[in-house]
Length: 401
Image (cartoon, rainbow, N blue to C red):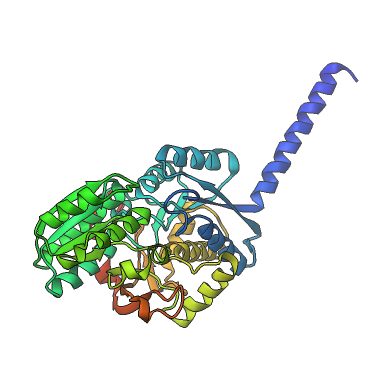
């Protein structure tokens, strides 16, 4: 055989191998979990969110519409540039069909810009900024677990109704904290309360003394913590050390389950907040939580539960449409109510917001807790349509298009 002939055969073989690889990829539905594996949100999201995703795949038998479900994951290190580089590689080179989680609103907003551009689905769980379904919404995203509007709205109304005003905010200086402060301020004022001021702290702050002294000097009765993770834990612990509670009531605008045992009930007790999920609220939540606990050694946070619920709904939509086409799948997701351990009668709106009930909670006193994860007292249900921002008030530019 001449060299040109050998070269031609080689080219054909390479083409066949490439085609074989493409066909093999067509038999896989690939899910990318982009999360915080090493930073301050790792306990409440991280590896637990990957476990929650794998549980969702197992619940549907590991296959959907003839495609084997594969879960891959990566650590975005709370950096938007790292996150977008990972997700771009997933989409361009790894054949990822759907991206899930996010965590850290700055990171999620950056990922959403990319997935909107590439027309890929993004199922957001750990990120809170209400701008994700507002001015920066996407026709291919679903914001599942909570947002800053819902977390702050119900809590602010309840506190003001109890005579809790005026307010002062201690705010994490990035997209999530800023959105919490903004949304809570609107609710406080709308409920007849007043806001005297705010101070913003850098992400991942260790020393809150100067910020707490500013809050104490403001004359406000309510100190609202618009932060999360280690920032929330440090702020609460140091507020206790400064005896802030003698002059101010501390209100948490966002609480992650795993933060509470790390902080200790002696510091955190009686804080009021609103959440979308608590492992011990119903028999259904306990079934999911106990299965999760066997795999992870901790009860699931709302974010981890949200990853599972969002992927369950996504897999059902893929099965119903027999397609992974983002437009077909998200249309099916919008047309089908969400009924599972996480939400009953939930609905996915056109702006990407999944509307469901939220729950007003109180962190228990040490003597009220029977075991490590017995942390919250359920107070009341806030119906989804009251908790979340009305769709016509968010400024989503895709509505009606």
